[in-house]
Image (cartoon, rainbow, N blue to C red):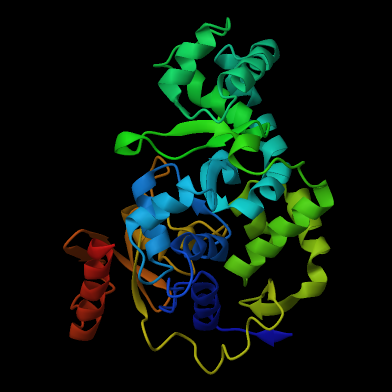
Length: 364
């Protein structure tokens, strides 16, 4: 078994995430295909807010614009729905049903108590499902407020200003009835019937779905453990182990700091010779970037002393500065905020590289 240094593990994860500075461009292919490829590279992008997910795509591509991400959504090349950890994610359209087959039941079970607290019991949810199928039929695309208003006409009365609508919509999404559609004005979410938005198809069987999820995860986040897979996906530990077993023959085992990690066979080739990408080791990451969300612990990439600068609480993940696979600061438009203890004096070459990143993000 090969032993990898911390630098090698970080480099392999940076490269797997499409953050090595060689992201896919748009030359010779539709922009929507490049967007889908970038999303697939990360397995999934956290997408509860439109702005950050656009920038997550930017970090993994070249030559795109924010409008290209919106177009990929409108063309259903990528789709958003509740998936990993019960949170809205953007995934490639051809991955959606496999991920949903595995994670939908997990999310439904996890949210059951909260639904009951909100008076969304089984009978209410069943009536809402029937009503939603009628309300959204015929390729209709409706906002949350429009759906709530029309549900009332079908005898399902819920309070728009409460937590009832998002939990009811999440129930329908995790039941494979609906998904997010293209955003309305000012990035307001809309919802559509899944089988109208994509070509109708049955959910794959559990083994096929678990295999797809595990393949995507280890390709995007390896070297990683099955505990990391569970933390990223929200799967129970036993299911994460079962998923890893299904793809074990395609994975290589390596050792780091006394821990055994898995990654796709051949993915580690050359890691020892090039511990970090020399062409562009300084990158800027969006809020909620999956590089920070793919493993049970962030300690390898983010020193615990600075953790609250990145995640102050409430699930918010700041925009971050990446150097040689480590998080070394946060940023805002036209403002770099390096962690003083790590970078007391910002090297001119690094400052220039990050400035190019800011200019590129602004152009995007």
